[in-house]
Amino acid sequence: MLTILASGGAQAQWQWIDGSGAKVFSDTAPPPGIPDKNILKRPGARTEVKTSDAATSDAAAGAPVAAPAPKVTGRDEQLEAKKKQAEKQAEEAAQAKKKAETEKLAKARAENCERAKRAKTTFDSGIRIATTNAKGEREIMDDKARGTETKRLDEIIRSDCGPMPQAAGPQATVQ
Image (tube, rainbow, N blue to C red; front, side, top):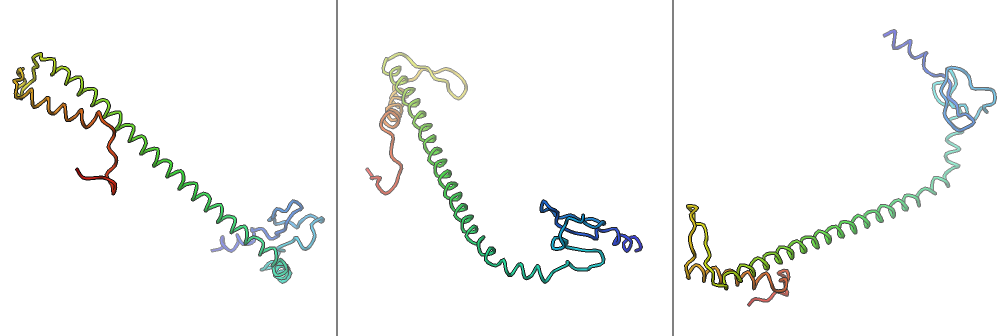
Protein backbone atom coordinates (compact mmCIF):
# COMPACT_ATOMS: atom_id res chain seq x y z
CA MET A 1 0.00 0.00 0.00
CA LEU A 2 2.75 2.43 0.89
CA THR A 3 4.39 1.81 -2.46
CA ILE A 4 1.25 2.90 -4.30
CA LEU A 5 0.90 6.03 -2.19
CA ALA A 6 4.58 6.86 -2.53
CA SER A 7 4.49 6.49 -6.32
CA GLY A 8 2.01 9.36 -6.56
CA GLY A 9 4.78 11.83 -5.72
CA ALA A 10 7.06 10.41 -8.40
CA GLN A 11 4.67 11.30 -11.19
CA ALA A 12 5.37 14.31 -13.39
CA GLN A 13 3.99 17.37 -11.67
CA TRP A 14 4.54 19.86 -14.48
CA GLN A 15 3.02 19.68 -17.92
CA TRP A 16 3.55 22.25 -20.66
CA ILE A 17 3.80 22.73 -24.40
CA ASP A 18 7.30 23.62 -25.53
CA GLY A 19 8.29 25.94 -28.38
CA SER A 20 7.98 23.17 -31.00
CA GLY A 21 4.41 22.31 -29.91
CA ALA A 22 5.25 19.04 -28.11
CA LYS A 23 3.78 18.24 -24.70
CA VAL A 24 6.43 17.97 -21.99
CA PHE A 25 5.92 16.15 -18.68
CA SER A 26 8.49 16.85 -15.97
CA ASP A 27 9.02 17.10 -12.24
CA THR A 28 10.91 20.35 -12.77
CA ALA A 29 9.45 23.71 -13.75
CA PRO A 30 9.45 24.70 -17.42
CA PRO A 31 12.18 27.04 -18.66
CA PRO A 32 11.54 30.75 -18.17
CA GLY A 33 10.82 31.25 -21.91
CA ILE A 34 7.57 29.23 -21.77
CA PRO A 35 4.51 31.54 -21.51
CA ASP A 36 1.91 30.85 -18.80
CA LYS A 37 -0.76 29.94 -21.36
CA ASN A 38 1.40 26.95 -22.45
CA ILE A 39 1.70 25.57 -18.90
CA LEU A 40 -1.05 22.97 -18.68
CA LYS A 41 -0.43 21.56 -15.19
CA ARG A 42 1.43 22.84 -12.12
CA PRO A 43 2.49 20.98 -8.97
CA GLY A 44 -0.29 20.59 -6.43
CA ALA A 45 -3.02 21.43 -8.93
CA ARG A 46 -5.50 18.57 -9.42
CA THR A 47 -6.91 19.86 -12.71
CA GLU A 48 -5.42 21.63 -15.66
CA VAL A 49 -4.72 25.31 -15.23
CA LYS A 50 -6.95 27.73 -17.16
CA THR A 51 -9.66 25.20 -17.84
CA SER A 52 -12.17 28.01 -18.28
CA ASP A 53 -9.87 29.62 -20.87
CA ALA A 54 -9.58 26.29 -22.66
CA ALA A 55 -13.37 25.92 -22.75
CA THR A 56 -13.70 29.48 -24.04
CA SER A 57 -11.07 28.89 -26.71
CA ASP A 58 -12.86 25.67 -27.76
CA ALA A 59 -16.13 27.58 -28.05
CA ALA A 60 -14.41 30.34 -30.01
CA ALA A 61 -12.88 27.75 -32.29
CA GLY A 62 -16.35 26.50 -33.29
CA ALA A 63 -15.93 27.62 -36.90
CA PRO A 64 -12.73 25.61 -37.46
CA VAL A 65 -14.46 22.59 -35.91
CA ALA A 66 -17.15 22.83 -38.61
CA ALA A 67 -14.46 22.92 -41.31
CA PRO A 68 -13.47 19.24 -40.91
CA ALA A 69 -17.04 18.16 -41.78
CA PRO A 70 -16.33 18.47 -45.54
CA LYS A 71 -13.21 16.38 -45.00
CA VAL A 72 -15.43 13.57 -43.71
CA THR A 73 -17.43 13.88 -46.92
CA GLY A 74 -14.13 13.80 -48.82
CA ARG A 75 -13.24 10.59 -47.04
CA ASP A 76 -16.61 9.14 -48.03
CA GLU A 77 -15.90 10.07 -51.65
CA GLN A 78 -12.49 8.45 -51.35
CA LEU A 79 -14.08 5.39 -49.79
CA GLU A 80 -16.67 5.22 -52.55
CA ALA A 81 -13.93 5.64 -55.16
CA LYS A 82 -11.99 2.79 -53.54
CA LYS A 83 -15.14 0.65 -53.48
CA LYS A 84 -15.80 1.37 -57.16
CA GLN A 85 -12.19 0.58 -57.99
CA ALA A 86 -12.38 -2.68 -56.00
CA GLU A 87 -15.63 -3.61 -57.76
CA LYS A 88 -14.05 -2.80 -61.12
CA GLN A 89 -11.02 -4.93 -60.29
CA ALA A 90 -13.26 -7.79 -59.13
CA GLU A 91 -15.26 -7.55 -62.36
CA GLU A 92 -12.07 -7.50 -64.44
CA ALA A 93 -10.75 -10.50 -62.50
CA ALA A 94 -14.01 -12.37 -63.11
CA GLN A 95 -13.86 -11.54 -66.81
CA ALA A 96 -10.22 -12.64 -66.98
CA LYS A 97 -11.10 -15.88 -65.18
CA LYS A 98 -14.01 -16.50 -67.55
CA LYS A 99 -11.78 -15.78 -70.55
CA ALA A 100 -9.11 -18.16 -69.22
CA GLU A 101 -11.73 -20.89 -68.70
CA THR A 102 -13.07 -20.32 -72.21
CA GLU A 103 -9.56 -20.53 -73.68
CA LYS A 104 -8.86 -23.70 -71.67
CA LEU A 105 -12.09 -25.27 -72.92
CA ALA A 106 -11.32 -24.24 -76.50
CA LYS A 107 -7.84 -25.77 -76.23
CA ALA A 108 -9.25 -29.03 -74.82
CA ARG A 109 -11.86 -29.14 -77.60
CA ALA A 110 -9.17 -28.58 -80.24
CA GLU A 111 -7.03 -31.38 -78.78
CA ASN A 112 -10.04 -33.75 -78.63
CA CYS A 113 -10.93 -32.86 -82.21
CA GLU A 114 -7.42 -33.52 -83.46
CA ARG A 115 -7.18 -36.81 -81.55
CA ALA A 116 -10.58 -37.96 -82.87
CA LYS A 117 -9.65 -37.05 -86.46
CA ARG A 118 -6.41 -39.06 -86.21
CA ALA A 119 -8.25 -42.03 -84.74
CA LYS A 120 -10.94 -41.79 -87.46
CA THR A 121 -8.23 -41.74 -90.13
CA THR A 122 -6.73 -44.86 -88.59
CA PHE A 123 -10.12 -46.62 -88.50
CA ASP A 124 -10.92 -45.56 -92.08
CA SER A 125 -7.58 -46.92 -93.35
CA GLY A 126 -8.84 -50.46 -92.83
CA ILE A 127 -5.89 -51.71 -90.81
CA ARG A 128 -6.54 -54.12 -88.00
CA ILE A 129 -6.92 -52.44 -84.61
CA ALA A 130 -6.12 -54.19 -81.37
CA THR A 131 -7.51 -53.27 -77.97
CA THR A 132 -6.86 -54.55 -74.47
CA ASN A 133 -9.67 -56.35 -72.67
CA ALA A 134 -10.43 -56.36 -68.93
CA LYS A 135 -7.97 -59.24 -68.36
CA GLY A 136 -5.18 -57.27 -70.02
CA GLU A 137 -5.16 -59.45 -73.15
CA ARG A 138 -4.94 -58.05 -76.69
CA GLU A 139 -8.02 -58.45 -78.87
CA ILE A 140 -8.52 -57.52 -82.50
CA MET A 141 -11.63 -55.35 -83.05
CA ASP A 142 -14.39 -57.03 -85.01
CA ASP A 143 -16.61 -55.13 -87.48
CA LYS A 144 -19.31 -54.45 -84.89
CA ALA A 145 -16.83 -52.90 -82.37
CA ARG A 146 -15.17 -51.02 -85.22
CA GLY A 147 -18.54 -49.56 -86.31
CA THR A 148 -19.42 -48.53 -82.74
CA GLU A 149 -16.05 -46.83 -82.29
CA THR A 150 -16.38 -45.06 -85.66
CA LYS A 151 -19.80 -43.68 -84.62
CA ARG A 152 -18.32 -42.50 -81.31
CA LEU A 153 -15.45 -40.76 -83.13
CA ASP A 154 -17.89 -39.13 -85.58
CA GLU A 155 -19.87 -37.76 -82.61
CA ILE A 156 -16.68 -36.37 -81.00
CA ILE A 157 -15.66 -34.75 -84.29
CA ARG A 158 -19.15 -33.27 -84.70
CA SER A 159 -19.19 -31.83 -81.16
CA ASP A 160 -15.56 -30.71 -80.77
CA CYS A 161 -14.48 -29.72 -84.28
CA GLY A 162 -17.35 -27.32 -84.99
CA PRO A 163 -17.91 -23.83 -83.62
CA MET A 164 -17.93 -23.43 -79.87
CA PRO A 165 -21.46 -23.85 -78.47
CA GLN A 166 -22.98 -20.80 -76.78
CA ALA A 167 -23.80 -20.83 -73.09
CA ALA A 168 -27.26 -22.12 -72.35
CA GLY A 169 -29.60 -19.26 -71.66
CA PRO A 170 -32.83 -17.67 -72.84
CA GLN A 171 -31.56 -17.53 -76.46
CA ALA A 172 -30.80 -21.26 -76.58
CA THR A 173 -33.07 -23.17 -78.91
CA VAL A 174 -34.21 -26.75 -78.50
CA GLN A 175 -33.66 -29.02 -81.51
